[in-house]
Length: 176
Image (cartoon, rainbow, N blue to C red; front, side, top):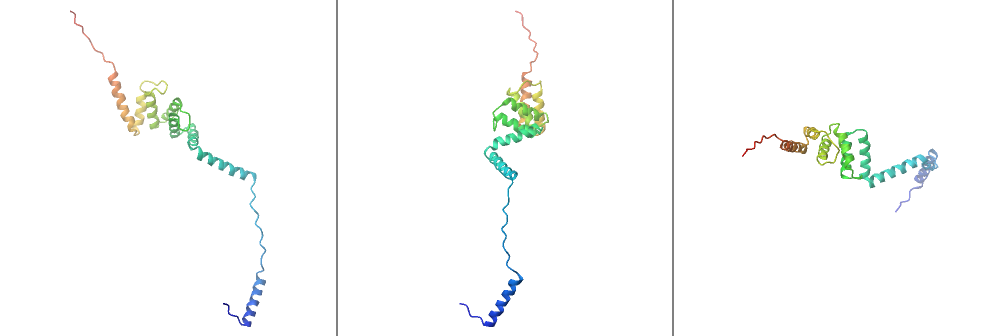
C-alpha cells in the first residue's frame, strides 16, 4: 500500500524528473544492420560443412588420403601407414604389391617396422625378387632399432639357413 507523499515533495520529484529528461533526452533506437554475407563467405561455410561431413562419414578413406599425401612427400611413417592400409585393405582395395612398394620406400629410410614388414613380405613371397642376404639386412635394421619380433625372426632365419647349407661329405664305398 502506497502512502501519499506530501505535495511539496511531489513537486520536487516532478521538477527533478523534468530536469533529468532535459539533461538526457530519450535516444531513438537505431536498428542495427544485419550482417550481409557475400558469396565467398557462404561458399567457404558450405565447403567447410561438406568437408567436415565427409571426414566424419568416411574417416577411414580420409585418413588414407592424408597419409598417402605425406607418403608421396617422403615421410617414412606415412609410407608405413599407407603400406599397412594396402596390405590389410583398410580404406582402400587390398593390394600386396603396393603394400610392399610403400614398405620398400620407408625401409630405404631405415624405418624399423617397414624393414620388418618388407622382410616378412619377402618370406611370404609377397614381393618381387630380392638380393641374397637382403632379408637379413632388413631384419638387422629392425632389430637394431628395437623391434623384438625382428630379432626373433632374424635368429630363426639364420638358424634355418645354417641347417640348409649343404656340407661336403666324403663317402667311401666298400668294394665287395
